Length: 514
Image (cartoon, rainbow, N blue to C red; front, side):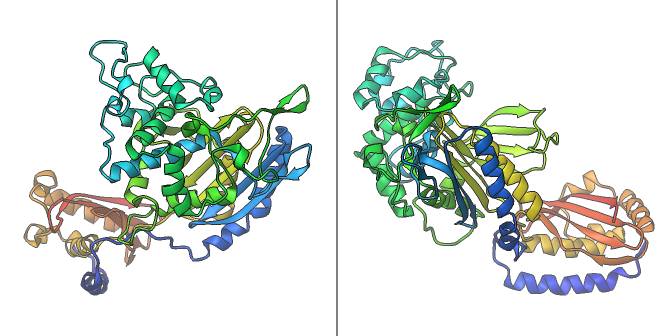
C-alpha cells in the first residue's frame, strides 16, 4: 500500500530535519508562541478590578491590595478601602500587610539554600539540630524520627494547630524549646499523613538559626529578601512606617473591630512576614523564573532547580471529585503540599502553585501558573479573609478572556528525526524492519501485517494527504503529529527508548476529526 502524494511531503520534512539537526542544541526550553499575550492580558484589567472591588465590598473587607505578575513583572495592581480605618489611609500596592502563612515558603527556601550549600540534608532527623526533639514519644515504638522534609511537607505527625499556632507568633526561642522539652502530642506517626502544622515551620525557623548562626529573620532577609530587592518587607510591625502599616480587623456586630498586632518571635517563621504587593511580586517573579528549565546563568537567591523542587507535589493529600470552577462548571482537582507551598492540578490539566495566609486581622493568598507565566496575589486586613476566592475568579477570568496559552515545548532533534524516519515507512511497512529506527521490542509488540492493514484503513478514510503538521512534543522523547487529509486527519504518536539515539518503542495511529 502506498500513498502517492506522501513522497514530496517526506522530502520537504527531511530537508527541514537535516537543517534542524545541524543546528540543534541538546535541549530547547519551552516557549510562549503568542507574541501578543501581554496585550491580551491587559485587556482584562478593568474586569479584574471590578471582581476584586465587588468581592471586598460584599465580604466587608476594610482594605485590600492586589497584583498581577506576568513574565516576572508586576504588570497591574490595585487597592481598595483602607489600611487604617480611623486615619483613612488608602490601601495600595505599597501598603505593608502581614501575610501570615504565605511566609512559610520563604522559610522553606532558606532551608533549601542551606541544603544546597551542604550544611544540612532534608532527610536528616530534626533532632540532629534540636537535641530536645530526640526524646519525643511517638505513637508507636516503630515510628521513624521526624525529618526536615517531614517538617517542610506537614508530615511530621503533629496535630493541625490552627488557630492555636496563630496566637504563638511572638513566642521566644526559649518557649519553643521548652515545648519540646515538655513533650509533643502526635496525631499520626511521622511520614504517615498530611496535617498542617505551624509548629513544624516554627521548628524549621529554629533549625535555620542553629545551622546558619543567624536568626531565621536575619538569614532570610540577607539571603532572600535583599537579593530580590524586597526593601519594604519586615518581620517586626513596629519597624514599619506608620503610614504604610495595615491594621488588622474583624467584622463583628456589623462593624470593624481592630485586632492587636503580635510582635515578631519564633513562630514568625510560619507566618510573621509583613510585605507589600510591590515587594512580594518580586518573590513571585523568582518562582516564575524557575520555568522553563534552561541553560541560562543563575541569577536568583537559590538555584532554579531548587525552586522547582519547592514547587513539586511531594505530599498529595486530596482528590476533590466534586470541585467546580468559579463559574460553576464541574472540574475535579488534585491538591498536594510541596515545601511551604500548595499545589493543585485541575480537570483542564492546569497547575497552580502558591499559598494562603490567615491570622487574626489578616487574610492573603498568592497563586502562580508556571506553565502560563502568570500569577496573582491579594492581601486583606480582615481576620482570615478568604483571599483565594477572588484570586481564583481573577485567574479564571484572565485565562478565559485573554485566551493565552501555556508554554509549548519545542520538539527535540531526535523527535524531529524519528518523525521524518517514520513517515518513510508509515505507508509501506514492508521496509520497516530494515529501517533501523525501531527498538528491539517493537516487532514483538507490533506486527507489520496488522500495521499495514491499519494504515491502509486510515489513509482510505482520510483521503488525499494534503499536509503533515509539526510534531507536538509531550517531552523530549515522546510526541505526536497530525497528517491532514481531505476527509479527516490521522494522528501519529510515538515514544522513544532511553538509548542514544532513541529508537521507536511505542507507536499509535488513529483517525481523528479535522
